[in-house]
Length: 425
Image (cartoon, rainbow, N blue to C red):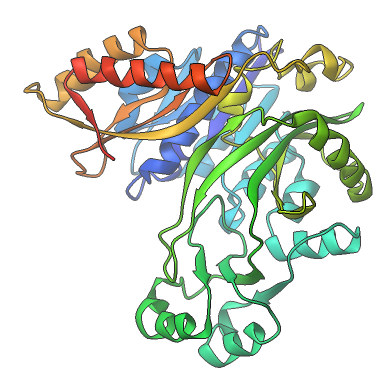
């Protein structure tokens, strides 16, 4: 029976990096999203099918999946996806936009006439390009930072400086199809640009396009939306913690929290902006990153045409399963979203060192499962990869407010210390 069977594929934990090292920070977010959305679809009576990377096969115990195939280093992930989806009617894809990965995976599903519950191809094509998204924002007359395209064949010092002369400092450059805080470079003055080309230019991927953009100071926020036949349904507004390195690519996404304190005020203003954007072609789950400036105006940065990390926290603060808006598009968003905001979730990376005497296989097979059972705040289990002796995990609280959340976090750290883990600052 395949009528209610769904293939859920998260690229990083599902074998997308089966030929290379798994990027641990992206894995933590990816597995956390996979774990949450598998559980939420399972609670809607779907049968769940997925793929799992051979190096983390032991973590399948944390997924409420009915079927899971291990992907080893010799397999072609796109071929395995094609085979895995054969007996499924529905699909949900979580994958990065770079190198057209998300687009190509979704196209496989469309070509096989599957019901796509993630994001539709047309929206992915637009939002996967940061420069096209910028032009889209400009055309719809919403505020967005001045942006120029840096094609790979023109990425040299002279061309770069010529574009910089058209912008105001500070500026940033980032991959044209990047995700999260990947490879963001920040410059406050011309001398830092000279230093970059003499010391850090090799960090630029030679065959990849970039954009150069005015940096907008303010509060990093995002809005999470599910588009269906009833329109664009706002799930939440989320604060984001992004740490940007100066003159290098050491930028990182640290996590965030939801909801924000003045949710209703922002909701009214953002709805006006979303109406200008005419997002009627967006079907499925997506997010929009924007900046709240000091004068309380907004500047739109980019569209993420996929499930975003914020979902890990959002599912902790809604009244009902948020995926009802996807599986039952006639349902009212007000029955899902809690307008009183009685719950709060802080979601973040946590890096740990193990100071006990157990070997790694016993830590993974015995100690960590006990920790997971005792500490539901941990959504992505502690994991050591790529010969790194430290463990990384992802946490999401379910609290009444930020103060209560901090109490939960302190209790968790105390519990981890009793199991001989130490937090790495």
